[in-house]
Image 1: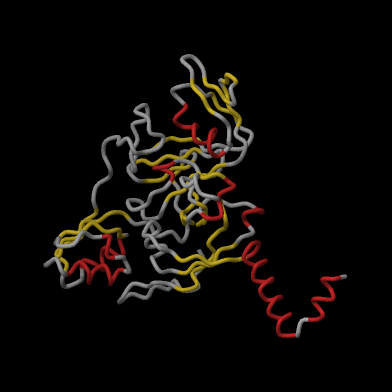
Image 2: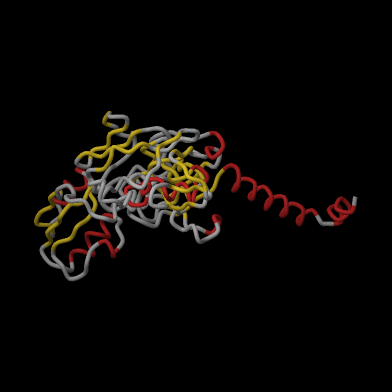
Length: 310
């Protein structure tokens, strides 16, 4: 009764303003929001400066393989969820899928996969006539200055075949050649164990955790699942000489308590994604990118990307 009287005491403009704020808050939480792209990890599907419209309802209705999604940074577990940075990547592995990369080519459940609307880029080595041309090239491609090292006539930039052909025609470019796949087995590749001789272009096969599935856990397999158990599912994890302890009890199997996803950036050589830090928990996903509200196009080329559905 008190609130109703206070509401009636407000003038029409104040009530209209408060209703508009309430409506925007509801839309932001449950329906739509927008996100500004800041990195090159999805170039050239998305470019730094693109403004994305994000659908919120897939958080409740579900995501599909190929969706471009927005999620909270899984590595910032020392920060409250609402304050973590938002990341934008593409779901390539759904819960229960088997994901693999062979010489940079994606396979899901042992079948090659391509996604409609994706514009994959890989590192190209571009030779310039003079070092000052690097800034001109980056501006023309819609890439930030930090992509190239200053003072060099050779720059490594993400390109696809179409962009590479455009770059080769520029008067200040000598050549643009695609670089070869990664070699070796660096220790910074998930799951950070010498048992897996993987790199960014030759990765897996890896089974994506699905809610209700169980897996064997032992000292050899623990690097794959320790973060899932201890951080995302919130259990106390311990290791003795002959067993794995979950909440103080010896366990040789573990059942996943939520679904997980495997994500990649469309700029495969410029993306810090699941190859480097593992799975994305379901409760970290905040929405699906639906269209580009405002696009950062490439100079001299019609982008056709403004209001483009993803």
